[in-house]
Length: 279
Image (tube, rainbow, N blue to C red):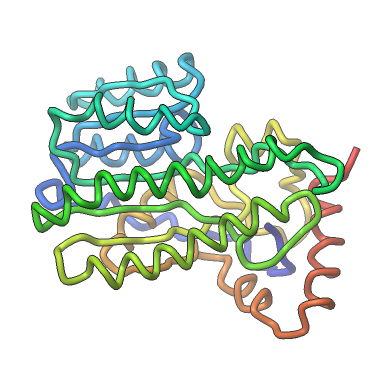
């Protein structure tokens, strides 16, 4: 999730760029209560797209819903644990009467950051469910409806963690790598059906979740993304899939594609220890 780039700036000049007719009238944002998800909600509301916001914690969820309702759109909220298999059916039922033109899956996180042999399998299965099983099911449900209508968009929020393995993030990184490859295949399948697919790759981002995790945002050379800039950039790039790396992180992706994997993984491990020291 980090690198040695000295360019810590992100492009904040990108305005809200979304076609409400193509990607509306409703958007579902999984992980829409805070951080990047909340920023997506505000940008879409400014464009006149109605919203279904999904998150686990009802407090932040309702707070964000109230702020985007003030922009004049309809908002529905659903408090769900997206590691629960039943959450997919509950969300599908709650949106059965809506025409969903955009799905943003922003809920994937490393919910169980343990060294693999020191953790429990159920904890790692939760990471896989959140980052693989549930987004697959939601894309399958909403993607079919979009394909039938001949329009729509799917955004899967990815991570630089998906470009190499790190201690305590091996399962999470593997899940994010899966998400990128899946997005590329899905993009090929849907590009002739009027449905855009984008995996939006994030690096270190100044979100409440990352702040709670104790990340050191002040490390020299660290590229730190801001949620509003990321949401604007993601919406602007939606039609240019299958993968877009948030500005400022391109060099990190290039470095993580080096074929000397042992050297690369060991170097990234030391950088991660500086960013997020182990207890």
